[in-house]
Image 1 (cartoon, rainbow, N blue to C red):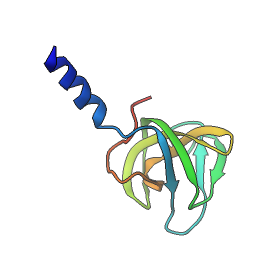
Image 2 (image 1 turned 135 degrees about the vertical axis):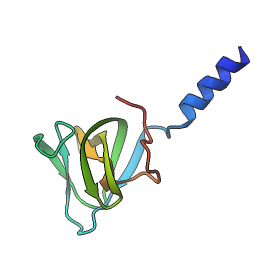
Image 3 (image 1 turned 90 degrees about the horizontal axis):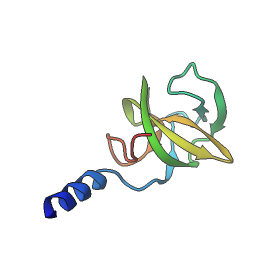
Image 4 (image 1 turned 60 degrees about the vertical axis):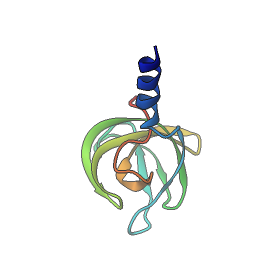
Length: 103
């Protein structure tokens, strides 16, 4: 029983809670919130650099290089009444790994 509780705590503690995270680019240009996990997916809306998005979960998709490195992690996010995917490479999470659970 104790081992099961420890395993559950360990498995859930690798992720931060869903929450607000800041979007940033090197050039200050907006980042697209998309309908899918690649740059060919439709644009739902654009998020200005410096604004916050609410991250819920992540999926893997196209590898992208942005302000915070290169990654295939795409976060399911909310911004200004819209939902979509945003590349993790433009979101300051403080980690090179996903910070929210898998979608």
